[in-house]
Image 1 (tube, one colour):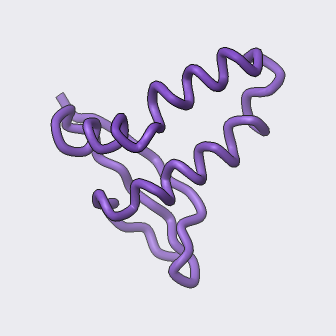
Image 2: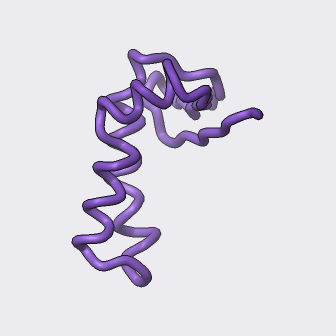
Length: 77
């Protein structure tokens, strides 16, 4: 497994991981409507691009066999 800094070319994969994992992780605490709203707010393609290019967020992706299997994001002040 490799961990690397993500770029804009990784947006689709980051979004796919979020869409696959949120329902598993948050189903017991978020309604389907709230989950859908939050996913669109934070993980829509335009939202991820803005986070990467204008908001100072950094994303690290975990890759295995050239497939992104996870990510983490952070922002420094």
